Image (cartoon, rainbow, N blue to C red; front, top):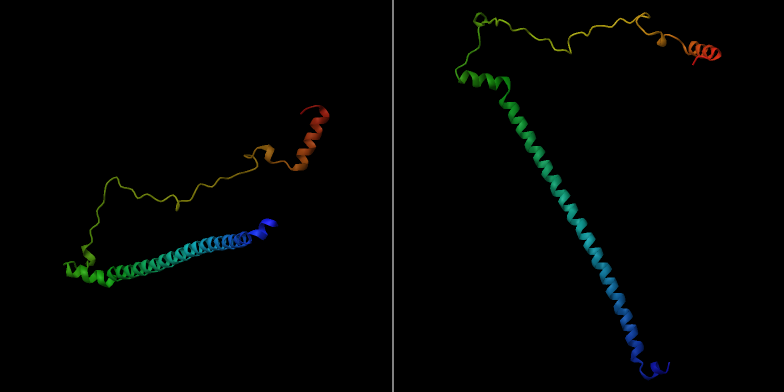
Length: 147
């Protein structure tokens, strides 16, 4: 106590030091908060830009699909073929060639699979007995000493 009475500035220095420590701590917390907030804002802006880019790409893709559909429509293809010198085929102009050894293969999906006819005679006897018959057989075998 005697030292504080002689030099009261020591108490003031302690109060000032504590206040400065509190200010520094608050500044560090505020800096950390601003850093996290700015990173979140930057990420949000990048997401917005990527979403806009995706929308623009989808619109360009849809435009290209529309152009392709217009170019390959039957009417436009016929006009282009006529402009290149092609003409519609007449009925008698068709020629069919027979290629020796060529056979048309039927897809497996369309062919019918052979049906299996299962009868009681083709199924093993183990699968023909009921649960009660099986239990009865086990009891009878155990009474005789057969496993």
